[in-house]
Length: 356
Image 1 (spheres, helix red, strand yellow):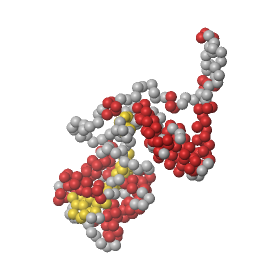
Image 2 (tube, helix red, strand yellow):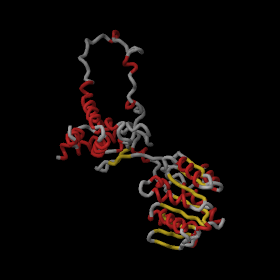
Image 3 (cartoon, one colour):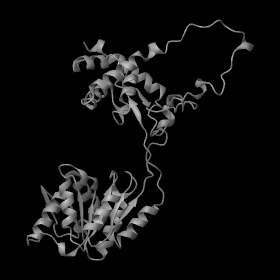
Image 4 (cartoon, rainbow, N blue to C red):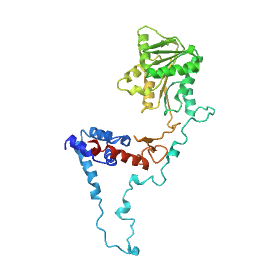
């Protein structure tokens, strides 16, 4: 079967069959539409095209194999044979699709409830935030917590403490736009005379106590310092905050983060912030190995702001994506009935017969 023939055969199948075919081949395949799913299947099976073809044929022929046998002579109700515990049917494993449908699906109103600006209330730091600040007084710190958990609070409090000790603070981010945003935010918090910014196209108040810059700029400053040029007050540097530190694993830019961490002055504390480091303990261990100061890991997994998943059809119809208000991790089969209906409608509108 040629690639074109296989692609056309896949186009003729319903999305539900394609998702079954993608299990074990493509991670998070339930998030893909039909066209994207077909492209992913073809790409993932480049080294084992016969396996994909055989599995596809088996799934297509499955309904034929499941056709019921001819009905036997109907027995009276009292003579019907009950299913015994020892029968093969009794030991048939439950299909995962059969579970989770006992409760009615969440309504759109309930799914949208609670979204908005919460009422004001006194701020109380979480235990992990208090722990991070306490550890930072003694060690370098890697903070790995979900988005919206309050990483910036730790950065602000650590910055204020370093500035009270007359130490210089450098805050790095991977993007100039984010650096500009932080410059505005920190200027409002600490005063414009206390905050400067250094990016590729902007240089303001370079001798300020708190400097905002991209990671590449800091790496270049450390290079200059190693060569005898001191452009900023690195001798008084007390804290380096590296936001979005998962860029350490970036294939192209990760070397910048790595070199920055290696060349960072030993007297400065390091505070790495991220919501998506996959191996934060490895990073902490590596920093402990290359720097004179040990590194502590502060890890927190509970989301302060829960996620909800919805589906917006091109006809502007909005529906919950799953039967539950939250995301049922590990159970992508629990799709909302209305979402299934819209998927089928979209498939009907964009199927092969309509595209020709």
